[in-house]
Figure 1 (spheres, protein in one colour):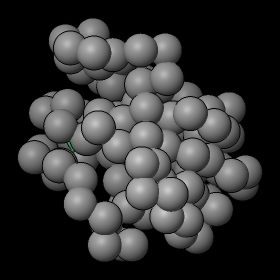
Figure 2 (tube, helix red, strand yellow; figure 1 turned 135 degrees about the vertical axis):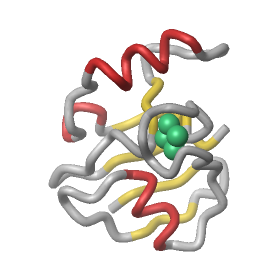
Figure 3 (cartoon, helix red, strand yellow; figure 1 turned 90 degrees about the vertical axis):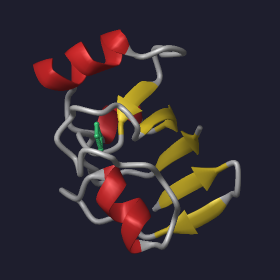
Length: 93
Ligand code: FES
């Protein structure tokens, strides 16, 4: 299950699907200007629960996050973070 804040909406999460894909499939509005290539940073989200179940942050994502303002230790790019088999809660910005 993927919980989306601040709306509190929950949607099914499919293992191996990126958070961006899951959000878009559920009709959520989230910016994704580069269409998931880790280039634009517009899909920046906070993961408040379930970080460990997500795919590890790779170099491209890390490099992009380093250039963004307001990044925290909970930050991920929704297009790069793939869902695992545990519940995840995200905070849209
Ligand atoms: S959609 Fe551009 S970095 Fe995720």
